[in-house]
Length: 111
Image 1 (tube, rainbow, N blue to C red):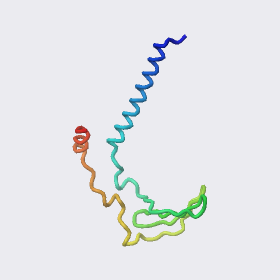
Image 2: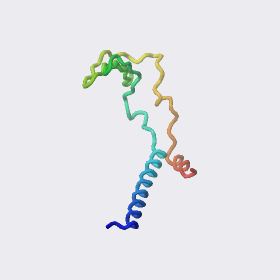
Image 3: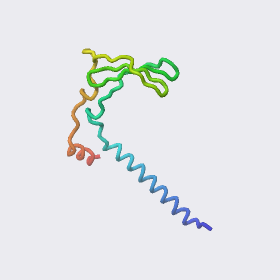
Image 4: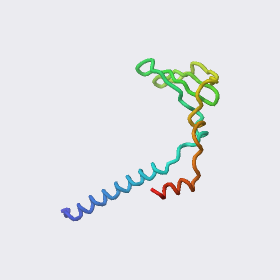
């Protein structure tokens, strides 16, 4: 037979483990750095649904834009275009530089 004391101890241990998981997730979200600008060369510029499971997407790769048709289990390039001169720069090129580790650590320590 299970005593009420052991049941309470098990419930409290489970609550402590769940609280630890939540605290780790919160901490990870607070200190997680965004990806470096050069980490991902692909950028989705837009998409248009043309059917229930079909769409046309515009992907930027370096100085080229690729228009592709995407359907279930199939991706086909439709056109490859040079990047227009009047197109807005990617957000990564406009973003301010990331602070160094010492600055991040100091900001984290204040909170």
